[in-house]
Image 1 (tube, rainbow, N blue to C red):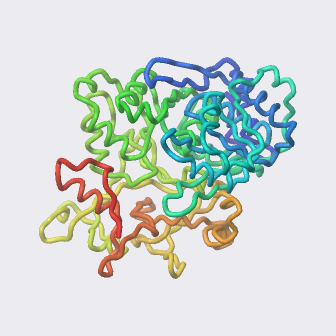
Image 2 (tube, rainbow, N blue to C red):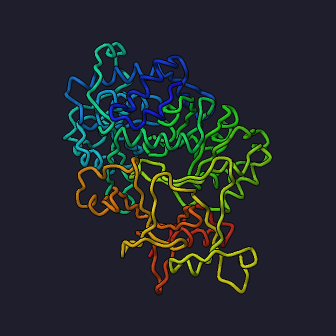
Image 3 (tube, rainbow, N blue to C red):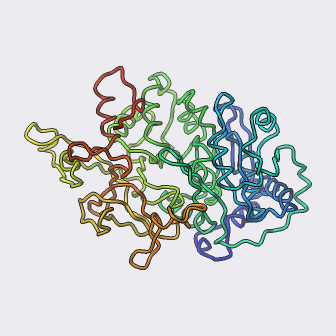
Length: 495
């Protein structure tokens, strides 16, 4: 296996080189296994086969003078999506992953992304193209080429020419969720991807012996960068399934870890809650989770009670609570920002809720927790230490916060991206120089305690009631726990 850590900062090294090296050195090694039914129907893709498919797709794009243009990727999760993504890289085309809504849903989000990215190409499959063409496509008039990549002649690979790209070439527009505003395309370069991949590889302590198991959506940064690109970078195989397969039967996720001896797998907090609720004792008895070394969790608030309940429920299956790996990241910093040390149990911190509402942190000891003489208690989980530069700032005065003082999380480093696609005003507010470095204002709130990062919420989500700051996820959790009939992740607090 090639070692890319020393090359990740080279100006002429790209993710195209990563795949080409793996294809040359481990040609017939299976890089990806996709479970079509979420259980036993396997399809495989070796490094050499992926290299060949990427060349064919790129050779089809290159005659259109496609380098630097944008291609929208409309696929169901699977191996064809991976081939199309790398086909874009091999052509110097900027990939734009997007979620294809169901037939009974409109295409408004996809239309917004296609228009904003000024996509010249839409890559998809023959079956999906037939389905899409039955819809109203008037908003896609600017798209010049609709291309089904699964019906492409593999002989096209002979026509491929390596593109003239560098580490600073844009490789991806990762669109934000758009939950509070229009989706924005985060501009990610090869250098960003390589640096962040190196961080994940080192912090997760990956090796050629690692085994991934991922059901996260490939159009999301955690699914794409953490689930698809990280295994390729590390030279270890990954087993994939669709998010729908997991949601239909959460047991499929843990069965796949058990069967394929997964060492690295993870998801947002809700997925662990779902496993607790939906997997019976009889089903747990058939699982062996002793191979699971890194159970990462992030992308939404991490709840201490979820980690505790999951660890208790699946300890008889060989799961170790020290496998939990809480981490923090966001697309604007490529993906990974902070994380702990592998094989160390998550660090909980009990704090006063009343003081937290004033953006101050008062740490409680065991005699004060939930005592009638003290304020209500909240337990926060550490997201480890920032890998590059991370500071906590007062978002109004832009002065540094002291330890145990809540403020906005700012990060700097080579994973911080160039900003949003064609959003100069937003970029000037979000990405700017501070102390001689290019910093990202994340919009997330948190604090440092003994150099460990704790997340408390988002600036835009904070509810101010009678002068106190409330975080909606805390209200939601309190309501959910008030009655057995209320399910986790089924409500929302708002004003």
